[in-house]
Image 1 (tube, rainbow, N blue to C red):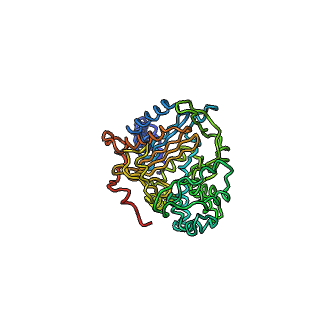
Image 2: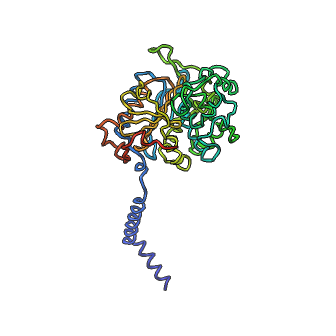
Image 3: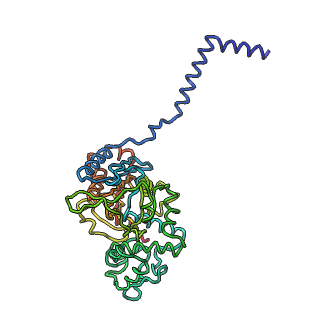
Length: 426
C-alpha cells in the first residue's frame, strides 16, 4: 500500500501542476532564507558630513604644505569609521603610504607606557605611590631625601618638580643609563613633587627600568606581551632596530629653511634611547586599535578602571591654554598619567602629540562623544596641529554640524562637568 502511495506522489511531482508547486515552494523558501542574512553594506558605517569635510581639509593641508606623506584614522564607538593614507613613504623611494606603513610615534609613546604601568600595577608588580628610589636606588638629587619623595605617579604625570626636559641634550651623545642617572645629583627641584608641571623625557623613561627591575622583563617584551599582541597591533614595535628592520615604513623629512622644500633625512636614534618616552613605531591601523581601546571597547585588555586612572587630571598645565595651537579653544588643561586632559566647552578631550625629527603624531579622543582621531605624518609640519583643532571644532563647537551622522548615530553622554570635577583622591 505504501508503495502505491509513493508511486502516485512521484507521478504527481512530475506532472505540470506538481512542477509548478515545486517552483513556488522553492521561491518562498529562498525569500525566507535571504531575509535572515544581514547585508554586508549594512554593517559598514557611511562617512559623515564631518568626515567628508575633514578629508577635504586634510588633502588641502597636504597639498598646500607639500607634505610628503600622512595618514589618519577616525574611530566612532566600537568601529573604525575612516582610514585614509596619502603621499609617499619617502621622497627617495616614492612608494605609497598605506594603512600598514609604520611611523615613529615620538611622545605619543608615553600613552602606551603609562597604561603598561597601570597594567603592571594591577598585577601588583609595583604601586603608583612607590618611590622611584625603591627600584632605582642610584637615583639621587642634590639634597638628601629629595629623590625619595618622587613617586612613579609623579614620573608618569610630569609632576616630579624638576626642571623641564632635564638632560634631553644628552640623548644626542653616547647615552647610557648609568651615566645619565648620575647627572641628576646636580639638580634640585624647583617645587615639591606633585605641585608643578615639568615635561620630561629622560626621567619619564625611568619607568622602563622600573619594569625591568620589578618583573625581570625588558620594556619592549612587556609592551609586546601586554598591549601589542592582545590588541592585534601587528605592525607596532619598539626601538631603533625594529624601525630599521621594518620593510613598510615612512622616512623622516625636514626643512632646511622655513619656506624651503622638504628633504628626506636619515633616521636618528637619539630619542629611541628613551624607549618608554619616545620609542614606539606603529601604523595607522595599529593606532586605530589603540583608539578603540581608549574608548573602552577592549576591556579584556584595557579595563574601564585603568582608563579612569590614567585620565585623572594630576597637574595643571596652564600654558597649554595659551599655546599657539589651543589658544582661545580650550578652557582648562591638565596632564594626567601619560595623557593630556583638555576642557573644551562642556567636553573633555584626552590628547597627546609627538614630534621628533622628521615625524609628527597626534592622538585625541572624547570619551563621552565616543569619537577619536589619530594623525601620523612623515614631516614636521605644524599643519598637523591645525588639522587636529579643526576636527574638534567641527565635531564639538560648530552649531551647523549638530545634526550630522557623526553626532547623531552615537548618542553623546551629557558631560556637564569640568576637568576639576573628575579629579579623584587617587
